[in-house]
Image 1 (cartoon, rainbow, N blue to C red):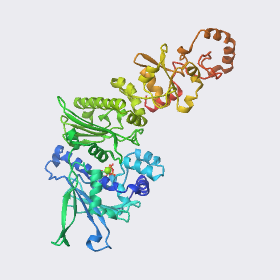
Image 2 (cartoon, rainbow, N blue to C red; image 1 turned 30 degrees about the horizontal axis):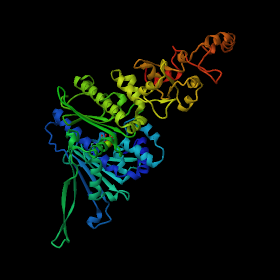
Image 3 (cartoon, rainbow, N blue to C red; image 1 turned 180 degrees about the horizontal axis):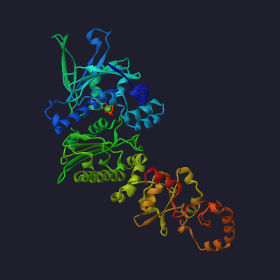
Image 4 (cartoon, rainbow, N blue to C red; image 1 turned 30 degrees about the vertical axis):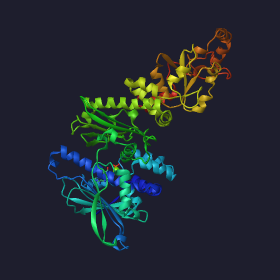
Length: 561
Ligand code: ADP
Ligand code: MG
């Protein structure tokens, strides 16, 4: 027997889970079942692709059992709950790596984001997918007995979640994993048929493998009196690939429930999009947009939300190339009929079928956003509040869909409350206004009171307020909307629309003053000019047309340019 210490991050996470997820403790079962499902997916794939495992006897299933001491008339024994699967299993090394550390570096950042407000944190943690460690919310001891497919030895992992765990040799007849929770006071209510059934139906109904629940069935005599109990087993989930069912058989509730299963979210999605392509390339897609942006949307090692299946066999959920990165908030499934099962990452990235699926998926998703903008404006605003920024990245990244994206993005403006589209701005433009004007910076309020806007306000010219950090890169790269140029007001040549007759005279008469200021500032500025754009403030600093601004220089660096 060997004792191991948990990685520091694990101990930290355990602490947090136990203290802030308390009100959502039932999700431990979702996490255990989804781990079993992952393990079955992995083995199913190997039995189809790995010569050594093709012969393996494999009946994929998940079994849930419990022991309620009251049912046995013995309250002194602990209540237990067990989740067992016939999946890939783990050897001793896997156990140390998988149930002792946290691999993703994003986790640290995630931990830093938690506020200490347990309601908010619970939501965050739910999205993050707390996984296996959530078992310690309801158990004071967890035991894992597991045997890896293709290996003879079985192993036992035991921990009380207090800093260390033990691994020792064990027995198990077949490959797979059995997780047993010794339920604490918070958890003993889950040693109940009805509780378990309810939680599985809520979160795991669409797990693609059968989930069986064993319990003691009561038998009654003719007078309705309890006679005896017999062990019984019942399947509790529907175990069908929902995305393969016809749309007209599925309700919004079905979709929402499925989304919660795959999206680690307790809220309904903002929208779903289910499509089937038939023809030269056959595939089914089912996409969701979460109501709240995923917590890791702005992290480099964000977790991709789309799972790839080939003919209903799970292939990967860790492939960022399935959709362009600006759509990384989309969750869902792509199921292809044409890709080979043993498709590798390299193949995926240059495969013609995959490129076709990806392009058509992007078109469909953007099309759905367009429809939303048109038909469900309130919902579209909810969407914009969360995802306007990634869509702007799309303007920069996805040249082929730029026209569509330009209709989708929204901006703040000096003329309207809330958001405006470029189309609406263009509608409002005065007859001889030559450009769409915008101002960039890092704070909307500061921009709104910028002296650079004074003259535009006086002339009743609308200016778009752009306070997202990427605006300075994205907007100049677009150049124009339809046939109208986009012009930043903090550039030296902006203000064409502001000039009028008296300006030349003013410039002449100020010549001496300008020379004096130039001499005084010397090397610190590139030039000093008379401007028409200020009306109340005496002076301002602008950037030369040819120079990138400071902010832009920093962002280019961050984007690796
Ligand atoms: P995640 O599922 O997000 O990777 P978890 O904390 O839920 O994180 O699980 C950690 C790891 O432990 C899994 O990635 C997997 O390698 C392993 N694991 C957990 N449960 C099982 C199981 N039932 N069968 C095989 N491996 C498992
Ligand atoms: Mg998991």
